[in-house]
Length: 302
Image (cartoon, rainbow, N blue to C red; front, side, top):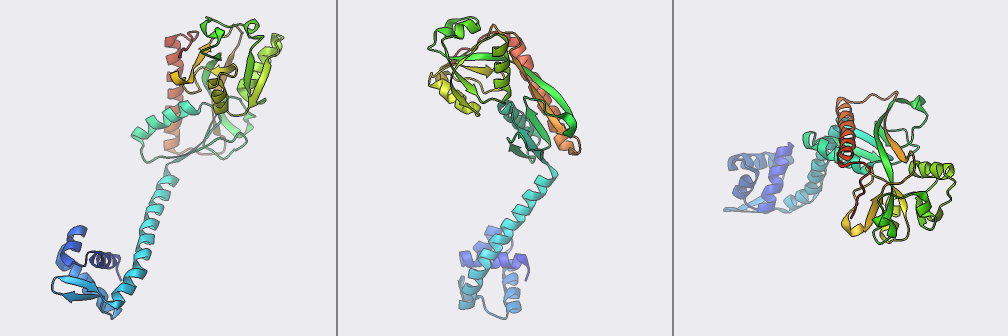
């Protein structure tokens, strides 16, 4: 039995008309008729009962249709799955995105315009080492990595509710914050580490009311007007008007953090992955130029 014969039979059984089935499959009617006849001879059963131009399934034909339909559907799905797996194994890029996810998604969208068949697997696991590229804001032990490029250095601002008296300030000092409630990321995360270090240097103890390990949760609490927080100017998503948040520069030295792009020492990158790496670095460079053009101490208002 040939696959074409089986497909012809299923479509003839569907339409109960040889001409309509042939038209649907874009083949000639004689080709369909010969294929069905050959199939019946091979199986030694009559599958179709002919009554003028109309066709109907015999008892054997109905049994054959009921068993064949699911098998053909499974074969077609198997073919699609193998095709997808084949493309993925050739052009798959696995990225561990611990920081700057919003810039990464822009870089992927741009890259997919010229490379539509590339498959991206994105994870966010600090201790994971099974990846092609890793974006993170702290530099780990370099023994495992071929190189670590600094792809972004960004200012850390203060985010305040637009209803706060701080929203009208040009620049904020730590003394302005002595009565403010703080929403902070968990200890060990780079943004929190920078803040803790500066607090200690300037003998400032924040009144912390919330701590969590997810940036989106900090953002949600900010929208509720529950406190103030530190906000990286570039690598977090743009503030939308409905969020009612204002960014303010801080009168605190060295309120910056760096973003790094890492690659594995023992892991060969495909040509496509190398191209994406270059494209990703360029995307981050463009973000840096954008903030320099706008003036990095210019506050973002909603």
